[in-house]
Length: 302
Image 1 (spheres, one colour):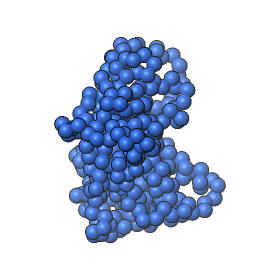
Image 2 (cartoon, rainbow, N blue to C red):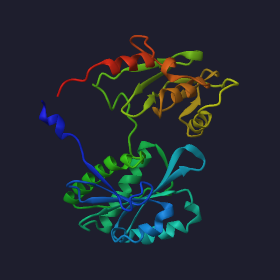
Image 3 (cartoon, rainbow, N blue to C red):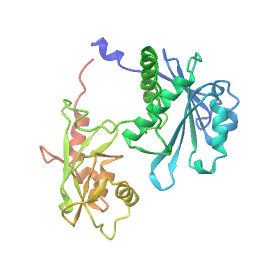
Image 4 (cartoon, rainbow, N blue to C red):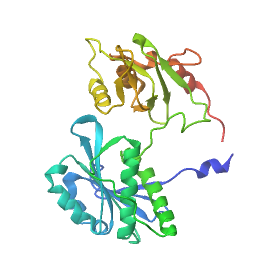
């Protein structure tokens, strides 16, 4: 058995402080000095009873984007006294979108104002780069200068946050995986040519990504009633634009979807089953046939 393969995992400890999965919780990683405390906005008062949110740290206000139902909206901030800042946000009518609070502090109380500002700047820039959520911050503050050793510590701090956030349902810092970022893995490409569209996609660990340059039918069928809002959001965000052919639109970026069917519906501008619409580029198998074959393959021993 290859012991090194067993050493790549991470143990994240999640503690439900009152036994309620919808209540206040904490998340920690062994040997990480950081700590994450999360709560629904409705339990802001209960959150305020905790000593750890009275410290210096960074925080994220998260909720659905009111203008784009399939997209989250986030606000990232830092404060010397996190809970006091959260109370002021709770009164701010311009930030009424958020439904969850995520606070990141240090268990050893060694995060300073400068550290928090560095983290805030990095989180905002990475959220904008990932493009998965609407960032509500008006500005993206520059990174504050830190000693070299402190920068190393804060970059490690950020890495741990990026591991924990998706476990808590926050994907706004996860980069969109593309063929360029997953090269060398033997990644299978899928194509869809229904209704004259020419689309190419790849499947990553958790998403189905339609690649830049793919085309989609411009006008939908009369019976189309699924993922219509998602398609509209892609148009509004400029990820789908007019193409030289007036009958089609073109993807200006690699776009992740939650499923092959969601991707197929957007490409076809109609209701589609992604398991039959997408086909393996090299073999012509449908996605469903390819998936069934993969499930029959045995994993390597060890």
